[in-house]
Amino acid sequence: MLSILDARALIAQTVHVLPPLRVPLAQAHGRTLREAISADEDIPAFDRSAMDGYAIRTDDPATEFRVVCEIPAGTVPTRTIGPGECARIFTGSPIPEGATQVIVQEVAQRSSDTVTFSQRGKGSNIRVRGEDAREGSVLIERGTALGPVELSLCAQLGKSAPLVAPRPRILHIATGSELVAPDEIPASGKIRDSNSTLVAALAAEAGGEIARQLRVGDDPAQLITAISDADIESWDVLLLSGGASVGDHDFGARTLREIGFSLQFTQLNLRPGKPLTFGTRGRHLAFVIPGNPLSHIVCWHLVIRAALEMLATGAIEFALVEAPLGGNVAMKGNPRETWWPARIEWSDGGVKLVPLKWQSSGDLTGIIGLDALIRVPAGIESVKPGERIAARLVRSAS
Image: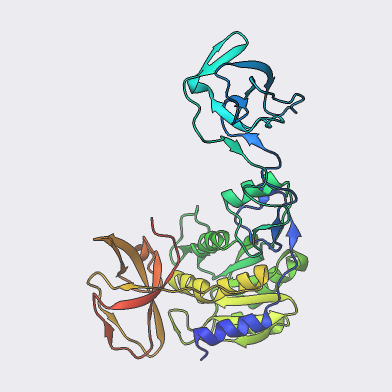
């Protein structure tokens, strides 16, 4: 059985990054930049007023000033400001030639075409050309995830279609003759399909895109037909929920072989999620995921997400945090490396990892509030409250 570390290394070696694409800013939120964004000009591009007020010469000894022009934002000054003169100016307006200071309107007393100031102050209230950035300087590094601030800066710079990582497209098939749609009332022996909703949500969080979702029964021929009927150019990753083990109706790995996939691994030193299967066929990837929901979650955050990251950016992120164990759940060891569901709690200014009452890998009720997966090394006897332990965050703590 491969370790998680070896599985991720294998993915890094076998998965090839998808070509980048340009998308409108409205579609770029959360995507990873595949180019550096530089300033095409100085920012600000011209000296401009930081306040509403009056532009004057800083060294002008006059006590009363004649208002010789008005400069709304978006206009170009046409007059030079001389001694004893000022320009009515507004936030964002260009500074006229000759002026070196803006006096805020709150200290101005205006009478017709003249104005006096109760105080002058020493600040210029001018945003000087290039004070934020100089032409040619890199402002957003390649590999940055585009959030609201980065997107706003792209808009300011005129980068209306940044080069970004694509969203890996996922063909997801939930297998099992017992499955019915969530809006159906299950007949005796049937259950509602929860994994399709789970995979769609996980994919959205990871920047993936569901190309198509299907349900098929425990019939290899039906599964092969479902995969074959999907346009091969419409998906990058095939995910099969269920059929990963070695039972009579577990035919996931066999199906992948039959349709031309080379299996890279069929088992991991992992609990839950041991029978996770990974295959490749040209540029296409496939995973057969153990059917239980918690197995889905563990396999996703430890392995499958790494494949999506490689496809999108050519790099894998796998950061762990370390914090004291809280709560009273006794976490016993196992011959396999265990990743235990937990939530994050803040207390006394610190953070604790509180294990959830994991009854079985199929129990969703016990993992409500899941924030993290605690790593329990293989062979360890137990982990007690207060001990520091590593965990993989799967949701940001609020």
